[in-house]
Every structure is written in structure tokens, then in C-alpha cells.
Length: 271
Length: 270
Image 1: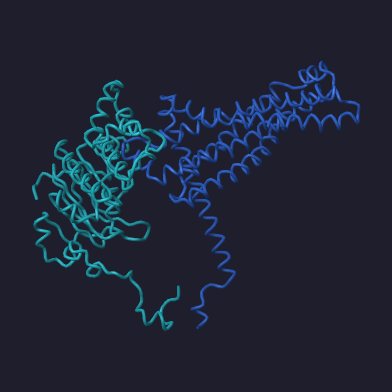
Image 2: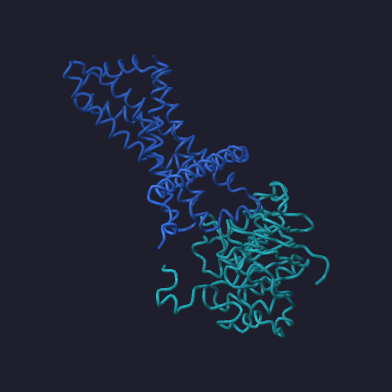
């Protein structure tokens, strides 16, 4: 076989393969951006029928309450134990309330609640939309002159966006209670010091507000990834399963990366 | 065929990426008639239905429904047109999270402000027409294949459409259900004064109920006629289809190099 017929060399193949992956990723990003714009444009129709969004808040928000609150309680209890163990070395066990509250409100509440929300509600949103696509329900809806983005996608997206900050707040609240249970009830840290130090040190505008902003941003990211992966799923069993996996993986990475970015902005603002 | 056509397909081309599916196809679907479109699997029949419904856009040519060019309609105009179309999908595509009743009521609730009592009466009438009034409380997962197809049929005619499209309505049905669906397609078309386009492989059932048949191959119309003309046709493609012959113009083998070449290592290796 002549050299001319042997095709591109390994270097060219590698470059071509990288190029192929990059253009694929860019194309998908473009499609996702268009999808997001369409979703926002169709949201008006969904808001005119609030029952649709309320139903989704029930499915993705209310039904995630158990896992969120139980996890919050355990994380709060662990923080109580670990925090006390460290603080009492420096004679600052009274500051346990601050440590528990700030860790939860600023970081652990929004981040862990969003990770749990992505695996509990995000994956089920992707599976539901993906299966509706695979069984032609979305096409049937479109043929019935009902826009599937307005009727199916937008309510699920906004249901997630609204649920997320509420779930993060409940996560933090049960976490603080968990910290109280371990620190005050079981270990014996002073009750008054636990609450009064927390009250004096947790700033609403900085600490609480930054937690709310973070959980709102995570809610947008997770819900968008979940609805997009479902809508873009290949209409086969394997395609839907791969989309569910993508939702969990991409949501986790997005949450952690966005947390870093948001935290660095918030520190700069505080400084 | 009569000149008053509800659907006209004019010199239409369509390709998925670089793979051509339809090649300059033209068809006329007369108002009030039941028309079957037949052809081998993958010849572009379902694609044609999607082009008529405006879910795909042709690369060349035009689709007119009730005198309006479907590819040129804006989104809201297309949705207004689709409200006057009903479509039955191959596997029903029923909404699995709501009951049979709610499936049939879906379009009425989405597109009208009718009071719930009136919707209830209309849904029960539609279900009665397909013989499933007694099943209105069941969920789609509790239905047999034939029942699901009938519910999907009731849903497709929920708003008394002018055009009803069926994608493989007989696929996977037992002979009794097949006969029931065939008769329903004919009776509902006549009772509603609608026009029906049916994409199917089932030649024997179609010959009993349709007014015209189009045969498609390689993205083109290769034969057409009334059931009597089709039965009497000497066209090799039609003959192969009517008598279900394994080989003929529709080849048994997928295109491949000669077997001897392949076995002796001269063909392309998989």
C-alpha cells in the first residue's frame, strides 16, 4: 500500500479527534444556550398556569424534603462534634454556634443541598422528560399544538429554581438544630452562649444573603442541566440512562465550580 | 382524483443530514377520502407525515394543507393549523402519568374554555365511539396494545379534526383488534367529514377501507390507484407488495458487495 493511501498520521488523527470533540462540545453548548432562551421565552405561558409549576414544586421540592432534612441533621451533628473537639482545645467551645451556623449557611447548606437535589430531583426530571421523548409523548404534544417546552420543560425548570433555596434554607436550619442537639444537649455547651454568639456573628446581608444567592444559582444550574439532558436525550433506553448519568455528573461539577466562583466574588465584596 | 385536495405535496425533497429520504415526491390527498401510503420500511413514509404536520422542513418543494404552505407558516400559525389535525402515533404515545379520560380530555382542556361537565360528556362520547367508555378510569399501563391504540384514536379525534394522520395504525395488533381499528378509521373519517392519511404496511386491511393507495419506494411515488386498480395492477412493485413476495423490486438483501468477494476476502471487511 502506498504512503498516500495510508491516511493521516497519528499526530493529524489526534488533532482531528481533538477538533472533533471541541466542535461537538461547542455545538452542544450553542444548542443548550438556544434551548435556555426558548425556555425563558416560553416561561410566560407557564406562569399564566401556576398550577403546573406548583405541581413540580411538590414533586421536586416537597418530595426531596426527607433526604434534605435528614442529611442536614446528620451534617449538623457531625459539625457539632468536630467543631466542639477543635474549639475546646483553644477554650472557645462557646463559639460552637457560630461555627455550625456559618459553615452551614455560607457553604454546606447550599452546596450539599444542591448535590442532593441534583441526585434526587434532577435525575428524576431528566428520566421523566427523556422517557416522554423516547415514547413520542413530546412529539404527540407538539402535534396537538401544545408547546412541550412551555407545558413540560418550563414548569419543571421553575419548580426546581424555586425549590432549591427553600431546601437549602431547611437544610441549614435542621443542620443548626443537629449542631445544637450534639453541642448543647449531649455535650453540654452553654445554651445561651450557643445561640447568642450565633445571633451576634451571623450577618443577614452577608452570610444569609450569600447563601440564598448561591442556592438560587445552583437551582438554576441543576434545573437547567436536568431539563436539557432529558430534552436532548437519545430516544432509547441507553440514551435516557446516559442522560441521567450526565445530569448527576454535570450538576455536581457545575455546583462545585460555581461555588468556587461565587465564593471568590463574595469574599472580594466583603473585603 | 378529484381536484379538491386537502393536502398537496409538490416536488418535495428531504434529507436527514446527507442521507436523502424523499426525492421530488408529489401527492394529492382529496378532501373527505381515506388514503393509504405504503412502501417498504425506511422509504420515508413517516417522514412524509412529519412534513405534513410541519415537524420537519423540506429542503425543496412545498406541502399545502387546506391551501396553506406548511413550511412557510410561523409558529403560531402552525399551531393553529395543528389544532385542526389529529395524529395517531405508531405506539399510541399516550401520556402515561394521566388516565385514559384525561388523555382524551387533554386537548379540550388545553385549547378550549369549555366547562368540565361538557368536557366530560364529550370525552365519554369519543371513548364510546371507540368502544372504551367503560375504560375511562384506567391508566395507559393497564391497557392492551389494541386498547391503547383505540384510546389514542379517541384522543386524535378529540377536537373533530379536518385531517387525521395515522402512523402504522395496525402494527403489532391481533387480527380482531386490527379489523376493529380498520373499521374505526373508515367510520370516524366518514362520521367527522374528515380526511385521512394512513401510513401502513398492511395491504390486505387497507384494501378493504381506503379510497386511494400510494406506493412509495426510494423516496418517490412508484404507483397509485383505487383498491380495485391496485388488485388488478401488473406493476412489479405493487405485485410484490400485494402478494407479499420476499424478493422483487424491493430487494431481500441490503446492498452489499457480492458474497463470493466478501468470503474470499476481496470485499470491505466489517
